[in-house]
Image (tube, rainbow, N blue to C red; front, side, top):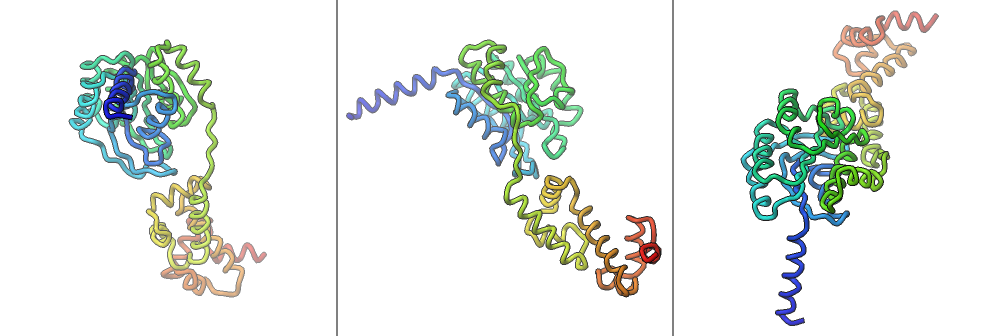
Length: 323
């Protein structure tokens, strides 16, 4: 193919792409791709839509949830929106994670400036680990200023209780799934469907339930933790000790144990140690010898620990169990 023909086809494809109605997704990142910018791009591309993106927050997260945040400065968020909106004119603004009032105000200015045909909002107040992502003051300001500019809110049932709007579309109680529903609706709106038509078709395209499967890594780490603290409970009853030995953060270890057993690492460690004490109390060892064996600083220290969970002293427990 000659250079002139290459140029013709390149220009033809560019014209078609530019003519497509675009969705601008304004939200946070998700390192795992389960929600956020990454999931929006994946969903909209899969449906044949044209997606533009602006990041509001960088999240450090994994399959167990968000570990930390870095909020992009509001001025930078606004500059991102201006850069794409001045050039391509998004048909839909799809808004997700907003974590502070300054970012909200920047987005509000851009909605009023560019007047997209549709504005969809998929807020999330609580993360999967029950972290609060939006404080009460921010929620109230969103309700007062952003919600009136939105054509629909697409969100989980528990988040819907914090907002009042003319059109609320409630998805499964999973943010990743509600976010996917919102992206799907946005893409269908670009095909000139009505909101009712887009919602109806989107629900057919997305299964209602999400199967949560524990990854092999989570189960492996949990099993390593259980085996380690059963063998080494005399060395430490401190969560930081085991997290360091497993080469993970205490927060991550906590997320793992809560995911598998709904218990904190500290609860598991204390329970294991308590059971070891009870086992040793059936032996001929003195309480002082047991305290030394299991790493307590003194007999009194062991006694206080034991009474905190059982309500009786080791000596009383030994007496009762030998009756």
